[in-house]
Length: 413
Image (tube, rainbow, N blue to C red; front, side, top):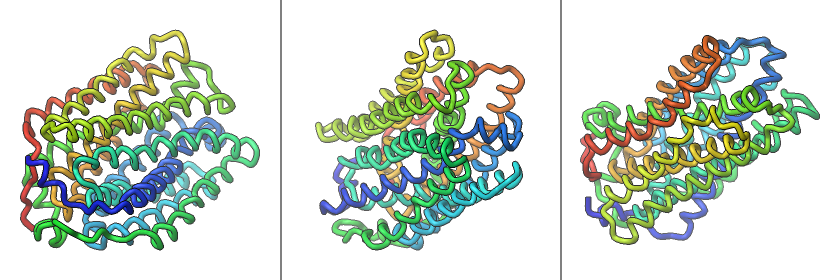
């Protein structure tokens, strides 16, 4: 694919303001999501759920997240990122606050379902806005920058949530964290505007493309299956890392915060570096396929050592290995989102992000349930860590075989 074919967005400096807004929304999104993983031990004691029930709560979230992904992408492509993003964050914030008012496992599961629907709109909106505002030579870095909000949110959550929970109770922690979204919404609505198109073709500016048309292309299935295999690994880190550290390293609510912050700080660096790497390759004249795939390979290799993490005796070495694996995932995600924006027309970017995100959520649903069952029956994280370490290389092989060259797809409306 000719690099110039993707250099459509305007070069206005306002694109970095847009990126900052996307970053902050993603951070809020992940803070809302991370609260459960941090408070799971006191919640488990108070509400009395089992390992398998916890797995099913996560699976329920993933199921509605999957449904939300399927619906939110086409909706955002039709109504635009400004209103679509604000609507998604509104649903997410209401659900996050509602966690603080439930008093049963069933009630907790119910508000978790609503949170899944709201959070599904984040990445279709953010990826679409990035595709609209950034050229290919900056796109992966911009994806990495806004996606680093997920790790920043996950860093802030263990810093803030335990303190709130210990001083005011877990209910207040859910309520206060959930209310942050209500500050972002008016800021977004006041500041955000659509870029003035300068070189987009008619195919870029037409109506949203139906999902059935996207499914006719081989690349759609490759990315859908690929995300369904790799993104559940990230959700494993998000939901089970605190329990893994507690059970294998003896960490408690009072001292788990620093290790989690270190892990997510490494993940943040990985997301930025992975995006920077392919963007730098492009600026040095590399073909877009070579640039993206080389960066993805580097990120996939960072994850491999996590298979041996359970055998590491030193707690901090084990924590750093987990953090490096998380860095590999975030760099991988930055480039995968950039590939979607490289290949699909802008009027389909939210839809394809949502569709492949649905695959990721479905994969996460099964992975969460299976993880809970494995831990209940074996008490060992080893099979899960082996799967995590190899999944990225398997998916990269599939991308290389079935999409040997990244080029713009012509999709009929």
